[in-house]
Image 1 (cartoon, rainbow, N blue to C red):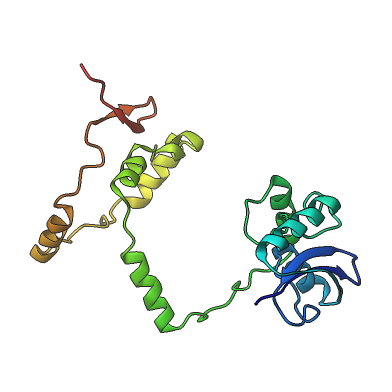
Image 2: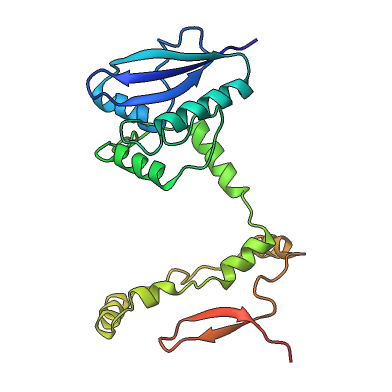
Length: 223
């Protein structure tokens, strides 16, 4: 039977505290698992004390005491605590204050993979590639993507006539991306098979043009 130990860890240098729980036989060696708390330890060192608050026999008892102390000490709202959510022995939605704490804790930290190359093995890269290729959008998602304004960038940062002229001059004499390329019969057949049974995402929709030439889709009205 698991024993759920509710504890409070206090950083010796900064005084920041963290309320958590563990099933480890030695809670003093367990450093904790909170995101802000661990970021704090990485930044200021693993120098902390551990105070055992309660040992619970079940998750229900852990939740009861965890919520009690979370409320008593206001661990989420107070900047003296590293908790991003109340300690109830399970997950939960983070509050606005929690997200703010997390943002502050990550400022100045360097991403673990910044400037690193070759960190993934060939096997891992193959798995990522296969997973990406097998990911398919549902018909509902495809319709939402189609209906969404794909030309919103034109409204945010419209291209001036001067810029258009510069781009035109740069591209003059250069072949297009698809120039000289043709679909093979196998590619055409494969594409045809993939589309069989798939509903057209813009069926029943019509294009509505804006003054700047961009457009969006909306449902056709019934006459």
